[in-house]
Each structure stands twice: as structure tokens, then as C-alpha cells.
Amino acid sequence: MFTLSKWKKGATAAVLAVTLAGQSTMAMAQQQQPPALVEVAEASAEMMAPQAFMPGTVVSRNDSRIAAEIAGLVKWVAPEGTLLKEGDVIAEIDDRNLRLAFERAKSQVKRLEARVAYLKSDHQRVQELLENKNVPPSRVEEAESTLLMTTEELAQARVAVEQAEIDLDRTKVRAPFPGRVVERLAQAGEYSTPGRQIARLVDTEHLEVSAQAPVNLSALLADGQNVVLKRDAQVLDSAIRAIVPVGNSLSRTMEIRVSVPEGSRYVVGTAVQVGVPASEPQQVVSVPRDALVLRVDGTYIYRVKEDNTAERLLVNTGAATGKRVAILGGIENGDKVIVRGGERLRPGQAVQLREESMQLANGR
Image 1 (tube, rainbow, N blue to C red):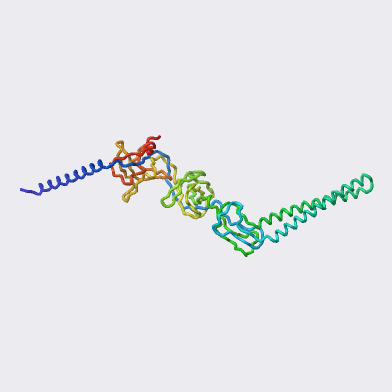
Image 2: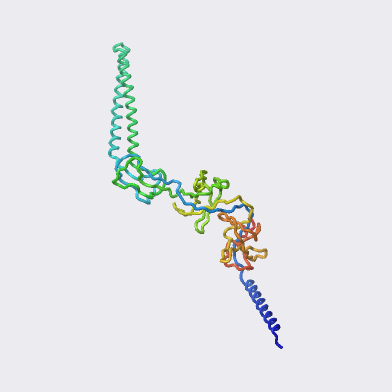
């Protein structure tokens, strides 16, 4: 007689058979799959600290509003976007009056040079007459005094020539450093006065990041300390160039200046995040950031077992630098983790290490 208990036993056996068959099929499929070509790196024990991210802005180390030094009519200003070298002309001011003053000063020098030459000859003649007692000593004193005063006038005239030449050169406003003209603050036809801003010049090659750090982190920060710059998904290693150790009484923050790594495509005004230590560093086990496999249900790492198969581990991440991330549990110092080729791996799948990756894993 067919009973309910017999039916349950039969159903259980059927489910078990299907499960075993599925596992057997999966194992056979994994055995039939060729080994995946991967790159590995070693997990290592390091001193790392949790990071605090704060907003920063890319700024130029040289950003000036160039001003005129003399008065005059503005003749020309370099257009926006012009790339200049140090010493190149940014703007020109009408130089006609100053050129006339320069020529007048040179003429005065030539006149006085001729006068001094005559007075020297006269002084020599008077000295000879004095030796023959044909003139009184007062005549010699008069000649010496006249020669001395004219010589001083000549020195002043030469200074006036130099000053006129400087003023004439100032009619060409020059770039104090290499950069680009980003804004014209005066136009041709306008009248310039000393101190009036003519153009804004920005050095687009020498950049850094300006950020405000809480003053309570001052004990953890120092010039030259390693930090990270984060923009969207891009993370770059960098260092603090300088700390301005003066806190704001309202925001309780102080400014830090962070170097921009070479090759980064930042422009002035770019918004970034600066990662700095939030506490004292601690001993952790870290892996390269590329070892993390992000999924909807969590973050995974593939570890290479002794039989060259991939083991998938669900992990929690901790502190991070630009290239390495701390792993909280599950990974030990010296474990080989997959950093390339893990996106399509399945747990237990055989792997084959690339030659350069094997050298890295073996410490060569």
C-alpha cells in the first residue's frame, strides 16, 4: 500500500540525486574549462591608517593679475588663451612721450660730457699758469669747483637716462612667469595708470591642490607626508607639499597644499578629494586595489590555492592608500591574490599565472 511516508522518502531521494548530479556536472564543467590566465600579487602586512576625505580644488602655484607700472594709452593686450614664456609681452602702452624723454636725457648726457672735457682742459691750463705764478690760487680753486659740480651733473644725467630707459621698457608689460592669459582686464584704447590690472596670467603647468583639513588632525599631518587624490574612480598617490599651520577660528580648519602628480590631467578649478590619515596607523594586511572584485552582493577577492585553483572570498575593506587596500580578515600575509583576470573566474576554477606575475609572486 502506497503511503505518504514512502512518497516523502522517494521525493527526498530524487532531490538528493538531482543535487548530486548537478554538483557532478558543475565539477566536470570546471575540470573541462581551460585554466584562466591571471596575474597575481602578494598580500602584505603594512602600517596603514583609516582615511578621511575632504574636498579640495586644483590651483596654480602662479596665478597673477598683471598690472601696469606707468601711465599711458593701452595699445594692445594679448587675447585670452595666449601661451606665453617668461619675459614675453602681455600688453603694450603708448611709448611716444617716454621715448622723447629718453632721447632728451641722452642729449643732456652728451652736452655735459663735452662740458666736463672742456673743464678738465681748463683746469690743467690754470694749474700750469699757477706754477708760473701768472694766476692767483683762487682761480685754480674756481676751476676745480666748476669741474666737480659739472661732473656731478653728468652723473645725474646718466641716472636720468637709465630711468628713462626703464620707463620706456615698462611700456611693454611682460610675463613674470610662463603661463596662459585667461582674462583681459583692460582693452586697447583705455587709459592705464600705475597699478591698474591689465591681464590675468595663470601658470597651467605647476599645479597643486588646496584643501582645508580639520585642525584636530594637525598632529597626524606633516610636510612630505603621503596622501591620495581622488576624482571620480581615479585615485592617485601624492604628498603634502606644505601645511599652513594657522587654523580658522570659525571653521576650525587649516589649509594644506598637496602636490599634483606628473601626468595627471587636472586643470585649474578641478574639484578633487584629498585622503589624509584620520588616526594613528595600525598593522593590517593589504592587497592591491586591483584585486577587489565589486559585485552587487559585496566585495570579493580571488585567492590562489596551492593546487592553482581560485578561491573566492567575501571580504571587508579598511584603510586604503592610492594603490593598496587593507582587508579585514580572511587574508593572511603572503597570500597570492589575483589582480588581473578575475572578472570572469568561477570559484574552484584552475588558473595559470603569467610569467611576469609568477616572478612577482615568488618575490623575484
